[in-house]
Every structure is written in C-alpha cells, then in structure tokens.
Amino acid sequence: MTEADLYPLLSHLADGQVYPYVAPLSDDGQPSISPPWVIFSLVSDVSTDVLCGQAESRASVQIDVYSLTIEEARSIREQALEAVKPLAPTEVTNIPGYEPDFRLYRATLEFQVTS
Image (tube, helix red, strand yellow):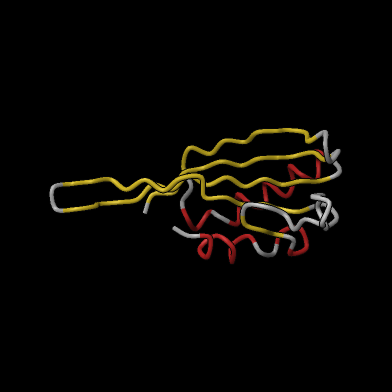
C-alpha cells in the first residue's frame, strides 16, 4: 500500500483539502489553509515472512481530520471510513482530540489493511 492508493479514495473530502503527512504551511510554520482539512499517513507497513518469501503486507493507516468544530471533524471522519471501505479496513479505532496551538478539533481514524 502506498499514498497513491489512499489519495484517490479520500481526495473528495473537506472540499479537496486532503494531504499526505502534513498540511501546507506558511513561512511562519502555521497552516496556510483554512479548516477543515484531512491529513493521512502510512504509519507502518509490515510484511509477513514465510519459507518461500513474503506472503502478505499489513499496513497501519492514520487519518486525521482538523476542523473548527468536533461535529464537523467527526462527520468527515465517518466519510473517510466509508471512503476506505474498498480496502477492507480492520482494527478500526476512532480517537477525538484538540490541537490547542491551532485551536482546532481533531478526529483521528486508525486502521489496518492487509494485502
């Protein structure tokens, strides 16, 4: 699994403000976009070894939604989960949060994908 596999599934969320790993930043290190936005990350990708080589890969994915309200962040997170259903996500975890530096709510979605 790569970022190129995830982006097409998520690109319609948050009016297209979907980015791998980090939101666009201005020169002062602050986000250069207005909320809401979505950040997605491949946290890890572990291959299973068998006698004849590698059998399968298990990727850990994290999707963070940033918004001015927790309701909007959760709603977009739900849309993200629906969008990645073709990947057959397992071990789905939802985590609420708040980023005091940016005064934004964060709704995180973590899951595993085996391929």
